[in-house]
Image 1 (cartoon, helix red, strand yellow):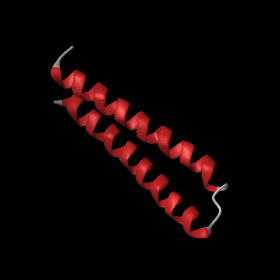
Image 2: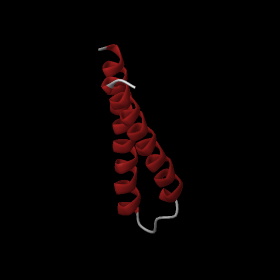
Image 3: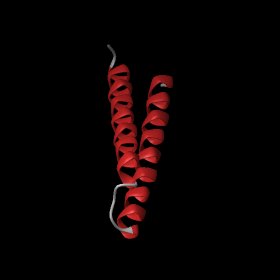
Image 4: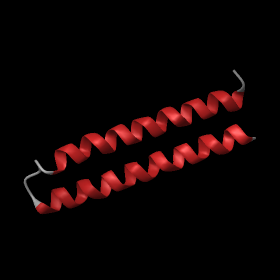
Length: 65
């Protein structure tokens, strides 16, 4: 596998990891005791989804090189 293929694969794995983390946290948000905790968790969910999106975009860019 080429270096760009390896890099792309690693970025896609990171994207999957970020997406999984966001999904797991989404499931826990409703169980959190305080509004502040829920708000912070939702910010983390949003950040994890954004990170997943960015890793997927980077992987696509690497494939195109």
